[in-house]
Image (cartoon, rainbow, N blue to C red; front, top):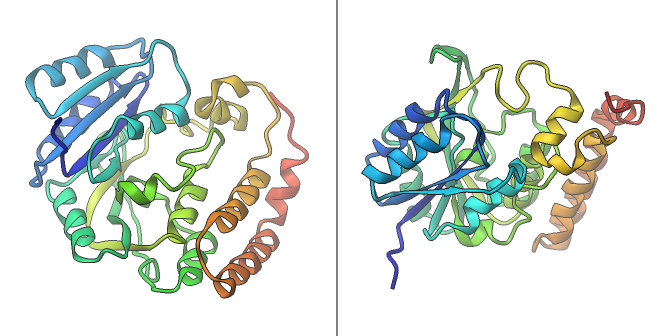
Length: 290
């Protein structure tokens, strides 16, 4: 029988030589050492392969997998999950950093409360040189026992989506649609998870989200370029990202196991979401491929 680690870390990466080694070092330095780290190399053309293979050769916790061709970010994210064996799962971007106690704190929260499906920490944004450029405020109702309150907090209260890089129960994540092949698909994933159980925010800033020009949305990339990053097959095609988000949040409600009161409340919240985002929805209809 193969060894089952406590946590699986899935690192999807494409041409990530710029920050890959630093990120791997921060993960391998975790105080909770019972994990596997799966590098999903999306057919990189830079030194990503050499870096990934070197780390896999010197640390048995690291597994390196290389795709024959670029299958798109969403498929690569999901592949790292499919390759995972742990009880808990975390996606790790190749350019972000975690403090040494990140996994320890998140796993402790999941172990303490079976109703928690995702644990994450407060965060800071850093630039390419590691300097703090922004401190994110904490959330207040992600741990509410009522599903509709969690859904409202996530969908209607503006926030960064750093929770997607938290630690999740593998069984709960397997019930979702994972990362979809469209821009912003991490948001509907989290809205679906919010209807499956509570989130726990560790009140320490142990996650460092990096801003830089080369990331998927960095450098003011066009809507079409962002869509191609998620799914190369849709490169150059007309996209309607806000309408897609609306549709997918509605699907989160449809698929959820919540009762009638929570379900009706969540549909009403999406009506409010449409009212708040009517300009963006209208602008979607005016966009053309560039």
